[in-house]
Image 1 (tube, one colour):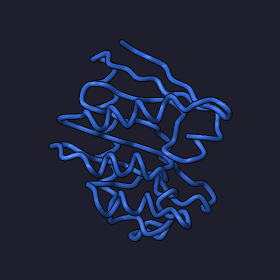
Image 2: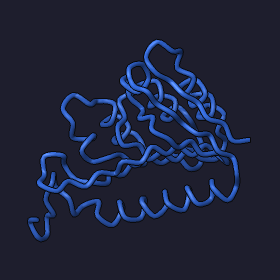
Image 3: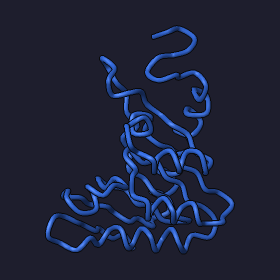
Image 4: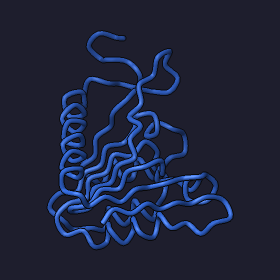
Length: 165
């Protein structure tokens, strides 16, 4: 069954508890591609899971954002990759997805894993367990994972270490 969840200021967050539950109940995989991630509860839930396939892709600009220790914790303690360039570039490229796969369901929507999303922003997440859609999202995650592995050591800040651009 597909379900939609919302949160906004003055309304109890119905997204985060459901996401935390799905992460805690995952038995085979948790795949996450998140544009902005500073929510320690979600990071800790992912880190705590002892499952065969646990991978995260972070937006490179968020990783380099001053004071974001949560993104650094995820990066250094998990099988984690980064995509995108710094925000201060003339033409930055961001990995702007908000995707979470827990076993055979996918969460997708506007909700970043941040305190702003949790309490101050108007957000939505769609929880989908329709196999063809889950498979398509997993395929896109695998494509992003492959690209991030290819360029892993090619980016230093906002510039390519090979060509300097």
